[in-house]
Length: 186
Image (cartoon, rainbow, N blue to C red; front, top):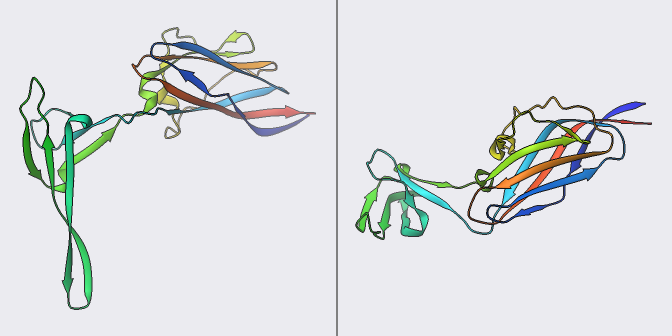
């Protein structure tokens, strides 16, 4: 028997708001999973603006228009571009009034919402054996492609691998999953 590195990819799991689903794959030979990678995708763009060093709350991207002007500067033959101040136009809500203010460009930060923020990994199954002790689940963000330290100690599987995922958000999210690990072939 020869040991080699292998990757198994799961089919796409489309989870509606509040839905819980199990995705599984059939194995061709014995496989020991070592790392799980999850990637999420959603059609709607969600996020918020944060103005550093201010008392403003997080501003929803649907209520804000933020833009900067770029100026062309010239000194002799040398040409460069300089970014001016960022203008933030906030459309008022019931709690806050509308305003238009200018900030330094470095002070206005946009943070987008990762689709995996809505997903919980409820459980993993190696063959029919439960691989997670916790029944509450783990946030899927722990297994995103940006996290490096999620080495798993899972048993060797010979028949199938399964993941139980739950969408706790209010939007449809597609989840792509893959396991990397060691496989044995004859």
